[in-house]
Structures are given as C-alpha cells and as structure tokens.
Image (cartoon, rainbow, N blue to C red):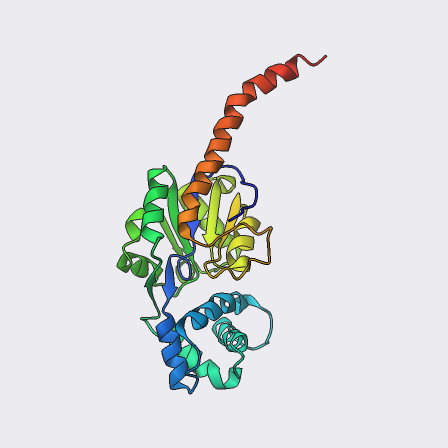
Length: 252
C-alpha cells in the first residue's frame, strides 16, 4: 500500500498496547450485546466499532460523561443502536478482564524483527495499571525496554507529558522516535505534538483509507520494511553529503 514520505530513520519505536499489540475479543463484545438483546452484531463488526469509538474518550461532549461512557455511547451510535439501551452492555464488556485477550498475530514477530534491527522498543498505554501484566501474559514484555501506563504516571494520551515521560526514561530524542497506535488523535497526533519524529496509524480494518496523507499501516509486519527504507535513505544522504559540501565550497 502507498505510504507517506518517510521521516528521519528511528532509533526507537514505541507502541500503543490495546487495539495495537493486543486486541479486544470480538466474541466478548458480541456476547455482551447478545445478552442485551442485540444478537445481530458479529464479532468483527463489534471490534471495528470499538476501534473507532476509542477516539471519543477525550471529546468534550456530552458534558458530565466520563471517557469510558463516551466510548460506549459512540460505540452504540456507530452500530446504529440506541445508546441508552446498549451502553450497559458495552460497559460490562469493557470491564471484563478477558476482553483484551487476542494478541496481534504479527506482534511478536514484528517486535523481534525491529529488535534485531537494533531499535529500542517500548509501550505507552492508556491503561488501568495492568498493561505490564497484560504484555507479560501475551509474551511481549521481553522485547520492551520501557512500559508506561497512564494510571501509574498520572496522565494519559494525548497529553504530551506521557510521551515525554517515556522519552526521558529511554534517554532518546523524540525526533528519532516513531510511535505506532490505532488512534488518530490519541496516538498519531498526540505523539507528533509531543515532538516525536513520526506517528503511524495502525489501521487494520482499513477504516481510514479516505485519509491518504495520514501515515498508516494495515499490518504490523509493514513496519520493519519502513524502518529499513528510512535507514537506507539516511545511508544514502550520509554517503552523498561530503560531495554536496564540496560542491557548495566551490560556489563563488
């Protein structure tokens, strides 16, 4: 698929956890909806709606509603269901400890490949203080140098402080760091606002295909080739820079 022009090659790549490395179970969502009388929503459709609804967490409206309830109401609206009737089922699903149980099939292999490329890897997640344990259970923790949980540090994406906290712990300049996540606002725009060199949207359902200028991937396995291409360009620029400098010196 076409990608936006590459930024400087990274020294580190940080990821979101939920909906990026570990996905919600569509079966759990469909089960809770069916129990509430909405059996016509299949697992794939329910999961896609949750991916899009997650961006509603930080919307200012409706006033007096917390972030989780905003996600639940948006989820219902995206499915064409009555929010007042569906929200309790959605909240029940979101509170289940077995909701986030589907490890992305390419997560481990992608992290391994990036690590073999010499990159520093980590996670920044809006979580309930449980993301480290979830990553451990998924078998992904050994690949990660840093794990930042919003509940632990006291601020959540897209607040720039949570991104800068991760950079400070790694001792890495933001311009040489890429961030990968499923949220356009929380992940891509949030990382760029915090000074990251690149934000990549993980759009596994191709829901953002209508935004051609947003850097995105539809599979995690697309990341290592992008890093390789950026590094190849850096080597090319490094190799040609002395010639460019010499030519500049000859200009009267």
